[in-house]
Image 1 (cartoon, rainbow, N blue to C red):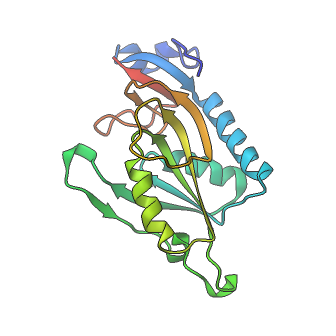
Image 2: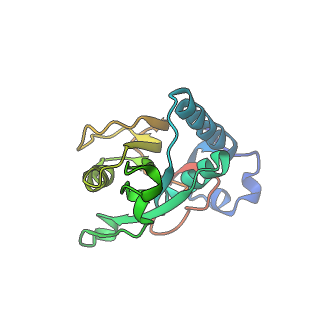
Image 3: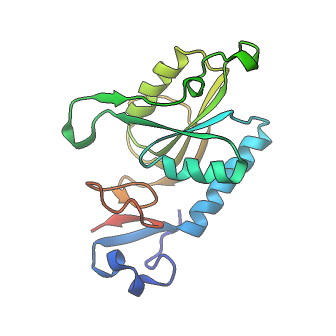
Length: 193
């Protein structure tokens, strides 16, 4: 991952970068979008196309929507909250029924190909939880895509077939990632001061 002090040559116009809250810029939107296109091309090179993209809210919705726009593949959202804000584990799993991989009348009784899209692979708890739930619903195939793979100890050996950048252990924000609900909208990935 390349690191920049100025995401797009416009830090004087960026109120977050100019107020001293951003310590380091990893990548800006042009490169993140380019990396997303590379992921889509890898999927097609593997001759695998999902029937549904499932963005894990809130951060996974950004790369899932970008992939949906690039491919025309339907995008659903799934809210999973396992450890946010020190709250008790909970999951509010609303999604179209066959996005879970249920057999559907017009698919000859077979499940669906599903791509779960997450913003960051940190400990692996969220995706391991989802894999257990979704595998029990018999999808035809289930793959995972994470925009960022964090250099931390994982609690799972889950295979992330499609991924973007490998990043350090620092706490990052932007491009879907937040800190206490802030900075998710930044068009770049950054480390807070």
